[in-house]
Length: 120
Image (tube, rainbow, N blue to C red; front, side, top):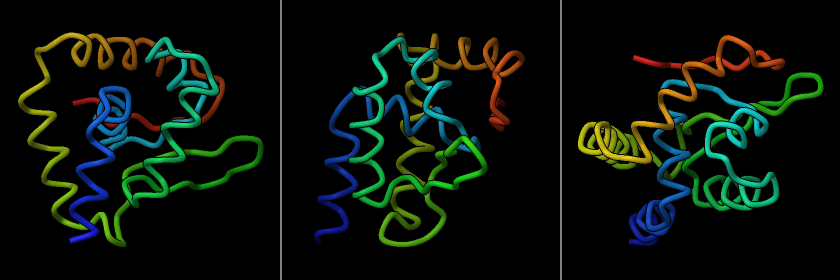
């Protein structure tokens, strides 16, 4: 039961849900998330820490940058991935989620880091 509670807690905040949807199929640095979400860096980092602690995101360090992506293993598992797909499908045409994807697409062309976007 703790796994379900952790996943639902992670998605209970709009900022964390926006981040999770952006990370579906992507590996993004904090700088990209700050720009796309138009939030201060400490706020983004705090939400990423919660997503990491609940097992929703994984981190990979490469030189100067840390890249965040959806976790492929651990407690997040299949349930969390399905929730991200469902939320993404349902919220794709709703602001601010729609705007986030558009900003990510624009930003992916000029990001100084080697972020990999899974824009569909």
